Image (cartoon, rainbow, N blue to C red; front, side, top):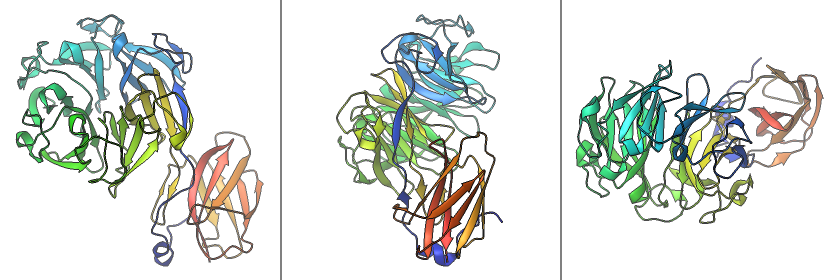
Length: 442
């Protein structure tokens, strides 16, 4: 039978989530050093990476601001130019000949249309599925006025997102507001009075300070805003109700409960499927996490120390992590501005009695369950032929020794003298975790 949810008694014995695999940071794309070179992941060069977004075909689109273009990384690891001639300008038309000027923000709607915050042209551009570039909103003149389409004015367009109704939200930090563009191209002020302050409220009665990025949590239908000038993370409901989600309003680097934590001019922000929020700390050189219980922690990076080193957790150094994106595999991608690379953070397996925050790439069956003396784990959906390996951990995340024999796609376990309780196991192939589940010993 398939592995089932733990019994109520077992779940009650396990209330604390545990990490059983360290964060590992590697270079995902970029040879390092500024440039404009297409090619394979680690030979390509970028000028200065800003916001990233996935299109509906699984391609990663990246704003390369100094090269005035949008780059694409496909599923095979090929880096190419998606739109833009590479020269600064304001030209619509075919994606290859169109010109942008310092594009910073990007978002993709459900129809696979791409929107670009064309910062120094003060407009939002649209790239349709045929590769046609048009002006979607903004007059091209710097300012602050709502209106329809090209009658509106923006000041300093930054990161943006799309909600479930295909409304576009874009950070306009010079105006201290977040703007909303609906599907009919009506531009309104979503939150912010325009005054530089830290005040919760509704719509234009709320106040922000240089809000620079916004992310949409599709599961909970809420928005998170990187309020850079206040060194805080704000939370907005669809009706414009704005509250302070994390941060004291004073700069610093302090983990802990959200209201006591400190941030240092955060920028990029992203939300995973469970509702955890990730924040790029551009000036304290870290990536932070705000979990669904309001706990702030440092995921990777050495606080206040810049550099360029991969490895595990806080031994890692970033040049300037300006953007963070939850990747399609559940890990994190970080745009490292100074090092002109995209770094990848492989997140730990976080396990609790109620959930395992890990997206298995295989199906697993455990027979019997719970386990009395022995069990067989059958792995289905393998895509490679490398030999499997097996690891098991107790509720505190400590690896335990258990006799196991691997034959093809099956793991035979013998309980031995292990005590009754909740355990977690992971299946690896070629050193990579492909499956993670809970196990109960009677």
